[in-house]
Length: 208
Image (cartoon, rainbow, N blue to C red):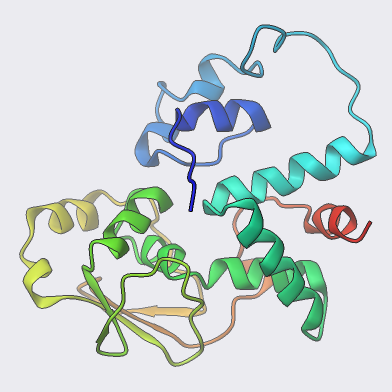
């Protein structure tokens, strides 16, 4: 699957908000949005009137980039959310929150979702005691994620647990004291999503 390999800071600048794609850098004075808030490109500083479709598109792109999901996969998540009972927008965020790589990030074992995705692909974790190296796995209630024994002594993970960007564990996730194991104890709720999404705009875009 094709994946964006350009500068992460350009994505934040394009959406005009911090997407926290580079971990601690996003909280420092080096953050590109703070230093240069204009949209990338030759005409980025020009004023443009954003219409309804533009607002919907930007919200979809924001969510897609925030979670690091490609367009085809994101549309698939929307279709699944639309079939579920309840509010489609909240269902969509619930699915995104339960991605394997996002859960690893929520555990505090990665400084960004991009790094969490890489750690999962390198098979540092097990899911319910079995090898799991697919970042897009959607976890269910009762699933247990653990860092492999041979990875626990790694200086990399020790440093991550000491300086992880995420300090607050979401209510739907039970993380052990040593921060190396987590269990999904409930489905994420809308209040558990700490980014100000307007998910209804995304649903309106795909509903056309």
